[in-house]
Image (cartoon, rainbow, N blue to C red):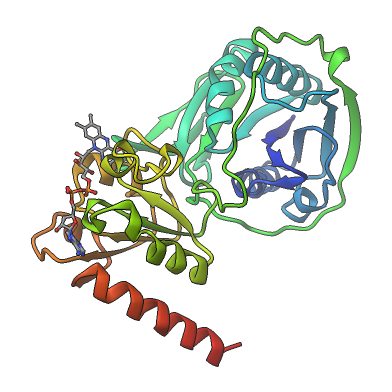
Amino acid sequence: MSVLIFAEQEQGVFRKQSLEAASYASAWAQAQGTTAEAVVFGNTKSDSLAEYGISKCYMINDGPSERFEAHSYAWAIAQIAVESGAKLVVLGASANAQSIAPLLSVHLKAAFVSGVVSMTESSTPMTFKRTVFTNKGFSQTEVTSEVAIISLSANAYGLHPNPVHCDTIEKNRAELQDQAKTTPGAVDKAQGKISIADAEIVVSAGRGLKGPENWGMIEELAQVLGAATACSKPVSDLGWRPHSEHVGQTGKPVASNLYIAIGISGAIQHLAGVSASKTKVVINTDPEAPFFKAADYGIVGDAFEVIPQLIEKIKAFKSQNA
Ligand SMILES: Cc1cc2nc3c(=O)[nH]c(=O)nc-3n(C[C@H](O)[C@H](O)[C@H](O)COP(=O)(O)OP(=O)(O)OC[C@H]3O[C@@H](n4cnc5c(N)ncnc54)[C@H](O)[C@@H]3O)c2cc1C
């Protein structure tokens, strides 16, 4: 019996969501007296996984193409789960993990519980607390299958270092009888930017910015804070910003530690995608803007006056504390 995670890496660096999965798996393994193990596609140093309690890494040699393919990845993970006797498979909150989960569930005849926010409260039967209704409530979900698959809600469980030694087992993808049903084509990735999914801080702006020519100050604020930039749906629909920055119910979900919303009214569809962020700061000229009801801190003011001052203050603070 073990607990297995799917550890996603990008250019040799494990994603924060995978390190959260490692933290969760290692705590679960300690409580159950078992080991936390990981499946990794591609050759990557396992040091950071070992830092978060993973003691065995199955490295799948991905061959010439390291592109994600759901059927093939799910099949490989399922075979390793059987080999390692995994009772629990832990996934992150990424789009790739979400597309693997149902396939894995079929292969392992295992229940799948999404959006888990805390450590299991009971192991017989396994019971998980998860978010429901776009983060408006929680439910306790009891699993009746022998094996369970869970995906974690981003930034909910957090990172908990627990350094251990990690053994590496090399696997060849061919040995795992590749089940690929699609051939990935070109993948266009935003270059040189902090991804919204992994960002600690997100600076987001809406139609209150009036036009794309005014995004210089948003980018500068993001740069001084080391933040990712995001926007509301109409902003990307109007072509002011790329669609990759659209957040909300129909865009990317945000679960950052700090979310700064500038000139965004706070429509329900926007809030649905950002409510998992821990601290929300709203800057808006309209004191009646609905976003203020969901905010932890608010500034009623004109973004064109507030943002330049904020940038100056942060720069001054950073240089004093350098
Ligand atoms: C099915 C469906 C799905 C949707 N999905 C999404 C989604 O995923 N994400 C999303 O964002 N929206 C989504 N929407 C759209 C959503 O309903 C809102 O229309 C949208 O979020 C509004 O964007 P906004 O706040 O940028 O613009 P507006 O509603 O126009 O708000 C602009 C705000 O800027 C403020 N403002 C104006 N000037 C300034 C200034 N100088 N300084 C500071 N503040 C200023 C105004 O007071 C106002 O509150 C969806 C809608 C539907 C119907």
